[in-house]
Image (cartoon, rainbow, N blue to C red; front, side, top):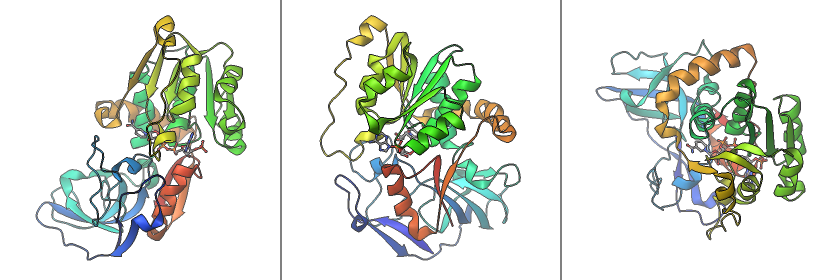
Length: 330
Ligand code: NDP
């Protein structure tokens, strides 16, 4: 049984020396507990935040202990009512091969209803993030034009497609490669997309959204946020989901210089956390699962094999190597 430990808190970009893959004993489950063999581990941008010791909505990873994260695995042993060996569960004991924990901390998932990895992505945390952020935080309504950054990623690709399926007048995405831009337009049905590395984001956005944007779903922060404020229409809403462009900064990034535009547009900018949005989970599954099953909503996954490659898969997400949800298959 191998598990990943954080050895030191990264400054700037995480380095391999900050981590170690450690051999650890498998703990037998106590009363009310289960032992699970993980099959898929989730690697997510927010994990960078837990590597720092700054106060946040989740406690920092403890140095020298197993890191945590979303995972789906098969129950090997169970001392808990209602969960039997062979069941599959979604839980938080990721970054390791085997995990022992209270059954209360796990949710059963149906391996026959959908591929196991999708419970971490399109039907899981990142899917709910897209759904809640767009529909609740950004108060999306039919006819809105929507701009989403990180648009080829797990959250962003779903934001754009949900907006389209719900009657957006125009959906614009940005991503970091021409291959990703092509995917957005040709496969996901975005009306326009641009590679943010090819010019000034504000110019690229103005060209892609000549009539402005009603909703901006921010996964990136920085220049993207300033550009979106610059293109915001009257009554526009900005949902701040993530700011991946600043996660490895060692100094605070400068803020948008055009916030005064929120006055003339009566614009609203609001952050949200998926953890507060689980009351929407039933509605999310009821609406999105059929779209996924019918192919109306498409998704990709970037699957890395082997627990030993988890760190690289995580760093790949920060670098932009992934298309769609990044997961590790064990
Ligand atoms: P993604 O699958 O979108 O992966 C991250 C992507 O970010 C990369 O593929 C890369 O794509 C892009 N990226 C990396 N660096 C930069 C940069 N400097 N500028 C612009 N883009 C960059 O991850 P998720 O879908 O899981 O997460 C997307 C965002 O949502 C993140 O900011 C994350 O923190 C946030 N999030 C927030 C939640 C909440 O509750 N508020 C919950 C879940 C996620 P590219 O090639 O396009 O650069």
